[in-house]
Image (cartoon, rainbow, N blue to C red):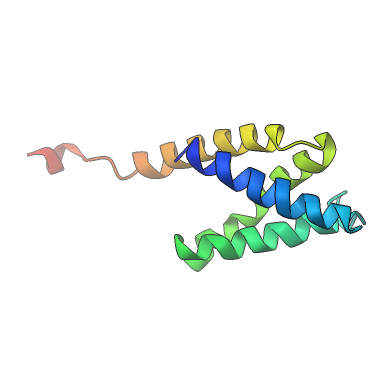
Length: 108
């Protein structure tokens, strides 16, 4: 999950979709230097996560998605956003999954 999701989500969302919006002129910066293409794709990325997350968790995906999109805009490549996405997922799954590890009483 740490590697697989970023390896297909980043080329699809940041490469294909955000790239297409940029090609169509969605480069206007809105807030803190975030492009309109980034904001639109981040909203779509958030909606996409509703199939596997609760609405609150899906909504929280919006903020790291803006960072991934910002990296895509700055470097004109999905490599930095993919690497950051892998790092983020690694921390997410480590923190969330480690809170669900069996306790000593579960093992008895």
